[in-house]
Image (tube, rainbow, N blue to C red; front, top):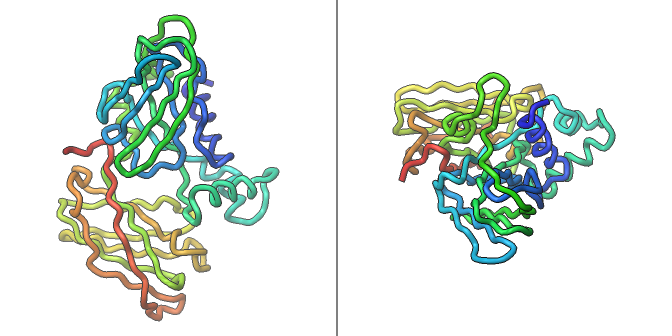
Length: 296
């Protein structure tokens, strides 16, 4: 198993305890090395909108502004969709010991009814001049999201991680950026009842839109994009209504990644019961999220 595989396994494993990491990966480094902060379930973390503050054991804190080259990347890691924690929650049966308990910890502590789980990871090159001792790394953004981890700095001269891969050699910055989220909209639904199906039409100013279903095992998403309107129909994956409206959540991205807010709007929304009867009072909201390709 390569070093990258071991790292990813460890970071995704933090989902089992439903939390961010209190220590970096690795937890002991030299000044100048690269560390990874498991930041938890963050919705607006991106390399160009987070500020990283490194407070050494002694001396003045070092601050990396958004877009600093020392912030190597922000990548969301997902659990295996066929893992026990995911499947056990859906079928209400433990396929491994206590899998439903671990799933409930994630839901109750962080995600609520949202079953779109991930672990946000931030890759940071430490300053070459950090003194020996425990340093704290705090990451924040304008939306008020914060993550913090400690790292033990030991004697020696470190260097940034090149993320050596089995076939491609060291990963380039472009390769790391390709794993990060682009500008997008999260589409959420609300109302007093849970319908069987929802049809929503979204108008956009881009050349095209692309709709993403984060949980294809739970729901079907059929859509087409024509003349600036994305027509989307969401139904359960099996002949049974979804548990709650949070499970209807989808994402929308577009050419150039929606580089400006307010480039997507709700044209219409309709909801139906299992017999096709209209259900009133279902609403949709759009949450614009800056990604790796945000400009401005």
